[in-house]
Length: 106
Image 1 (cartoon, one colour):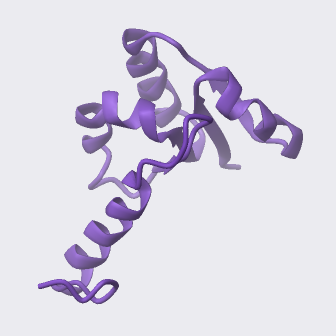
Image 2: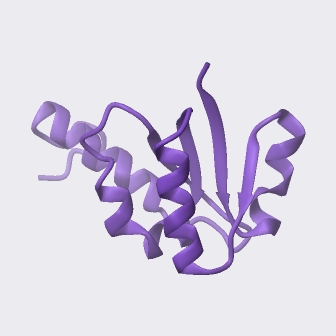
């Protein structure tokens, strides 16, 4: 059975444990990259990651873009929403259909 993980700073992710998700607080970039690889290689189908951590681990995350699993999804942290999640959705839709059907920008 697949599981769901949440990675990021402790203050941003600790609430996800209350709904049964596995939380992994990280503070150092090198440990975060190692943890992401471990989670992706195990039984996690979805890995939520704070936007601030995603911006640091972008090259590692890009390795999984063409894989079926895991889905790595950015979420806002306690510092606020950077808009990165919405940009990723827009980019995915453009790749799938060939044009920007969400914002109609050419």
